[in-house]
Image 1 (tube, rainbow, N blue to C red):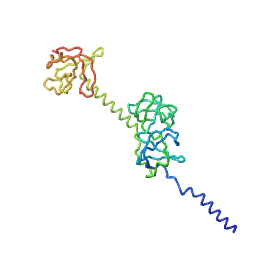
Image 2 (tube, helix red, strand yellow):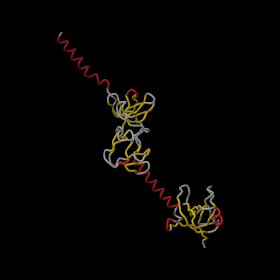
Image 3 (cartoon, rainbow, N blue to C red):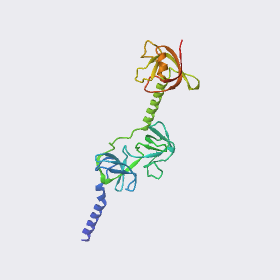
Image 4 (cartoon, rainbow, N blue to C red):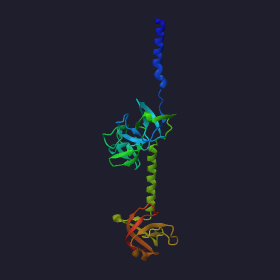
Length: 275
């Protein structure tokens, strides 16, 4: 009898010890589906933390960890996360770079808000909004949120949700776009000659512009091909400019750039016939 009691006790103990392994957590990362509408994604694993965004039924989140009854998730596109401007520099209007070590990513634009991640010097990020003091940035892999387990259900193993974009690519693209824009600006100003006191001068045949901007005239290099060879657009009193239409003139004035036009705009301060 004692022997049988001992065997039963051992069996019960072993069964009790192995029970937890029967309910193993899914290995991370995995993709989960949201089970309800207006589910809060929070800055920490309790209802006391700030809401960084909300998600709705059918949305997918990548789960990367768990703490008690809260899942740690990668943050979706509409999440709120901020970096203080004093610890970053702008590479373009859409890309920033961290300039210090252990820079906090916060759930709100203030230094008392919860920390949801950290960046180090050289890390780059996309900018959604710049208030001057704080940068609202797009989600990064180094920032996470938390969702209660009651609102998520397993969908598939692995991180099949949308991957993060590389801001380094965007910075390179922005640099190319800036270079291209500057090249186009130089081409628009190519027909102007820089003079003293911020004035520019251009020479050509003056004709009325046919681009719908009634106050502008064109200086063209060849009177025989008015559609080509535009040196500059000329802005000034129509009563004065119409007297020089069709003749070769020298125009002097201030210049402005207009990306919608194929040449710079010269606002007349002086106009003379050219011999």
